[in-house]
Length: 518
Image 1 (cartoon, helix red, strand yellow):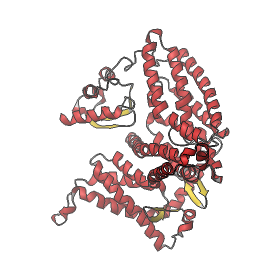
Image 2 (cartoon, rainbow, N blue to C red):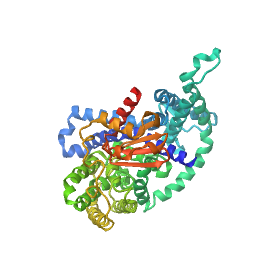
Image 3 (cartoon, rainbow, N blue to C red):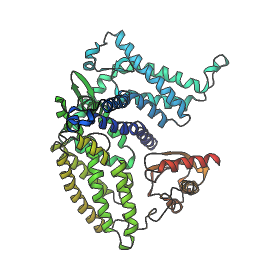
Image 4 (tube, rainbow, N blue to C red):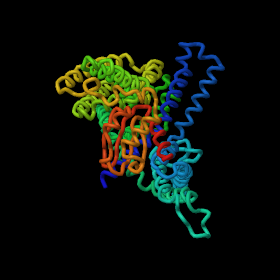
């Protein structure tokens, strides 16, 4: 029971990737346009004041801002899509209808109980206007609950048979109807328990918002990555009261991300609230930037220098690819998986270093947003925005890079760790992934896992195939290694993870297509 629950939690964590994946590039657009329309930026670069260009940038910011104005709905659809197994399309449709019912039900409760606040002060009473409806500000949690309900209703009732008189509402048509009923009940129940829930999260926020808070958020994220739970961990302080509540111009913002959105993209550096950035960004992208821009190159260099001479050329290709994947794409798992399972203690030390580094950035008042940690994000949110203290970030990053390099070099040699270049890596000499021969990879995967009959469910996250099996004893590990994967492990009985890196989605698509043809 507990193992099955753990698998469900991991699956839930993966579903958060879809809305976050949408938010990240949109956040880049918001960051770039938000910076370029600020008065201080126009003063530096007068051509930005051109009416046509300025109008384009302002409206791009407005269009991109619509995504962030509807974050709960994004979570509702993303969770429904990720958690449902039977009919993802009807699940997403039901989640959309269900979320509308949720917010209007809370609107009704507020109206009937006389607790509807005046629009100009509604944020002070924990209320917000979503899709034109004034409702309780349950943020992303409301969307997540709706998505879970829609996914459950889809898998449970998509084949529901009703008496002939009601046959029209049978099957898939029943799913949104059932979801609506459940969400109405939830919408009328939430107000009674919301205050208690907010109180618990507010107490939890004391830990997050303390001087050592960044240590727990940054180190915790790294430690949760091998289990696929880091998305849940991040969402807690990004979108709920655990990340604190902040009052800006009389309006209350819950969680770090909504608050950052308001300051970065609406108010700008001339606002008195700009000084809040270091307090907020210490939980966000600057932690990830420390990893992708400084620690990873140091770890990769340590691995390269400790690789056997005859393997250096081969190891260099793999290590550089992993570093660039993080440096340019914010995907860290390929390099982390190269040592987490062969040296878990070293991985814990690595997480500890990241946590200490996050605290150092906070103490130095570094204020670099946003969500992602690529070099592009550093250029936009670190260099283009004012008073980010990016010089201190670079200095701290270099110091931690040197420390990390020597720790990893010492540990690899001391304990003879089989990092890339120090053993026959299953993918180091494999060209299947490099040449994008997904059809061959898929055939190997299916055969190595015991054939179609042994494969119960195929899923993927950013870097890994995640497959439920009937019998793990049928897995041919050696054959699977020849497919070009960089890691194979079993996080739960009858469940296997196969690491392919950022191209995994194309592998998964080919596996699905070949299974469908069998």
